[in-house]
Picture 1 (cartoon, rainbow, N blue to C red):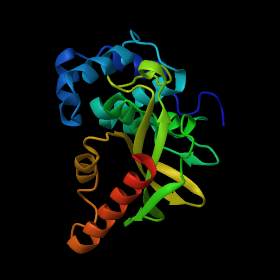
Picture 2 (picture 1 turned 90 degrees about the vertical axis):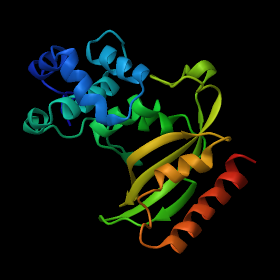
Picture 3 (picture 1 turned 180 degrees about the vertical axis):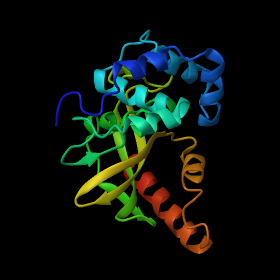
Picture 4 (picture 1 turned 120 degrees about the vertical axis):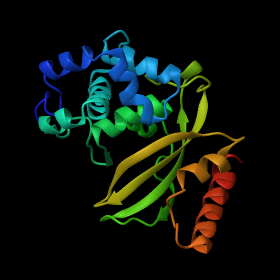
Amino acid sequence: MDLFDGVPPVDALRILQNITNEDFQKGTKSQGLSRVRVELLLEVIKSKKKVEFYLGVDIQRFALKCLLPDFYAGLSLGNHIYSTSELYDYDPPKNGQNTIKHGLSFREVVSYSSQFGTLLVPCPDNNNGTRCVIFSDLDAGVDGENLELPILGMTGKIYTMSIAQHSSGKFRFISSRILSKNSYKEIMARAFKNIYQDDPAAKDAFVKRCIEIVEQHLFK
């Protein structure tokens, strides 16, 4: 794989950087981002906020897909060298979205964890492979210094919940977010809203199992 595979062409980035504020606000409205994170996204795509190169690529691709979906589709961009590894892979724009929205990149979730992949609960998946919920720790560093774009309050040892597909020995990330000791049940309720929609008993058992793992192994 070439170093620039999966990287948007310069012309595409120029179009993105020249997008009007009105179109930017309209395009990001459906993303559920706070005002602070919307401003952060704008700073990254305008090159006013520096981030690691390939994370910047992921955020640029998220912005292109969100703001100019037809144009983005026409670029036919694939993976880049950091979006796939022996343990995991991810869709670059999805990683950009997750980083802006939740303050965590998928690479950070793996790299700064001492136990990623050891605490997981399988859940239903309509696609090929098995979907699972992964609970893990993460060393965010003092005031989030280990993270590229942390959300306020991410400091020291934190805990994460990731949803991924598990196939052919790899995790394919769907989302990752921080788990708070004070609100982890509410966070799970939001994240699991589409799981076992037609089977309340199965959903209840699934949620109870997740809470049990978190309380016994993370928040002990």
